[in-house]
Amino acid sequence: MSSVNLRRTPELVEHHQSVQEALVEVAENSFFAFVDPLEGEALAEGVAAVSSWLEASVTFTGAFGGTMRIVVAEPLALELFASFLGLEPGESADDARLFDLVGEFGNMVCGSWLTRSCQRRRFDLEHPSVVRQASAEPPAGGDGLSLALNGQPVFVRLTFAEV
Image 1 (cartoon, rainbow, N blue to C red):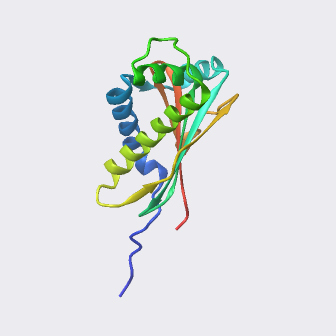
Image 2 (cartoon, rainbow, N blue to C red):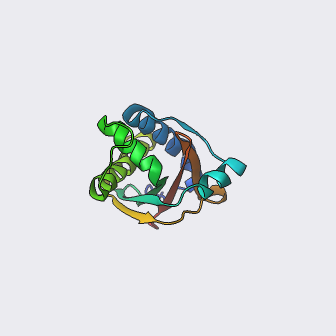
C-alpha cells in the first residue's frame, strides 16, 4: 500500500492564473482599480519611472505554506489609499496608515487566492509586513507576475515552504 502526500508543495506556475484572478478581483471590487498585462518595453519604462516601492509580505500556513510578496509603486499605493478610503486624490497618508493599507491589500489578495485555489483546505495568514525600498526587480520567467494596476507596476511573487 502506497501513501500519497496530500500536503504536496505546489509549483508556482500552477497558480499564476488564480493569483492574477485574485489580484483583479481585489483591485476591481475593493480599490476601484483595473489590472492590465505589463511586459516588454512598458515594463522597463514603468520600473524606471518609479523611485520608491512598498512590498507587502503575507506568510500563510495550512495544507501547504509559503509567502506571497506584492510589490507596488509608492505612487500607486497612495492612489489605492485614497480610493479605498474615499479620499480626494492627493490627500496625504502617513507611513503607518499607508503601510497598513498596503498590508491589507496583500492580505486580501493572498486570502482571495487561497480561497479560490484551495476551497476545502484551511489556511492561517500571519499579519502582513510592509517595507519601503528604493528599487524593485520584476519577476523573471516563471518567478512571479508583473502586472499594471491603474497603469503602474505591481509584482507578485509566491514562495512555498518545503514540506
